[in-house]
Length: 247
Image (cartoon, rainbow, N blue to C red; front, side, top):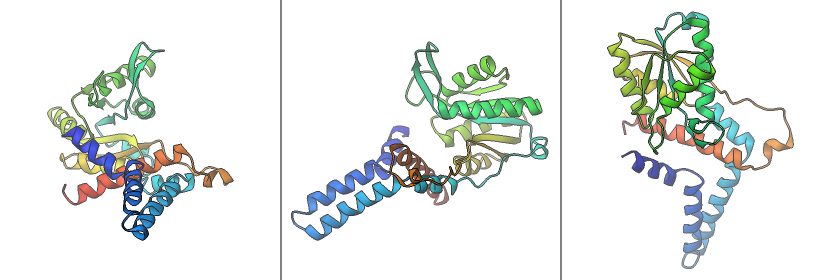
C-alpha cells in the first residue's frame, strides 16, 4: 500500500505529471493538433512557473500557518514528538545510514526544546525503503551529537499517518495526552490533524520556515531547487485534500 501511494503521488505531482501531460499533447497533435499543442504548452508553462523561486516560496509559505511555539505552550505539554524527515543513506563520513537534512533540522529543534523544558522525547520514523529506521538514526544523533536523551522510539511507521497511529499508541500507554509536535512548518498542518485523530492534544512546534530572500532577479529565474520545493508543497496540499475528503 505504501509503494502504491508513492507511485500514485508521483503520477499526480510535478515533474512527472507535467511530463506525461506534455507527451500526451505531442501524441494528440497528429489527430487533434489544436488540443495537442494546447496540452503541451500548458504543461511547459506550468513546469516553468513551478520552477520560479518566488512561486515555490509562496506555495510553501501558504502551508506555514502555525507560529513558533511559546514558552507558556511548552510548559503545558507532557512530551516532545519529533517526526522523521528522511535518511542520508550509506553516509561515508559516518560509516552508514544517518539522519537526512530534514530529519537533522527537526532533531536539532527538538534538542533545543528539550534543553529548555526537560520534557521527554519520542522520535518516530520507520524504514519504508530499507536500511536503518529513521527513528533509530534520529535517536543516535540526538543522544550522541546533541546530548538529548530519547525516551521512546517508534521504528515501524512508513508515512505520517502511521507516525500518528503508532506514536499515539505509545503515548497513550505512557499516559501522555498533550504533546509538542516537531516537524517542518510546511508539514505540520497535515501532521497535526492526524495526531489529533488519535485523541491527543497537539501544540505545533514548527521549524524550518521558508523565508523570503531579498528581492532580486534570482527570485524569478527558474531553478531545479524551486521545482523541488513546489512539488513538496503540492504534495502537502494533495495530502490535506485527501484527508479532508476522507480518502
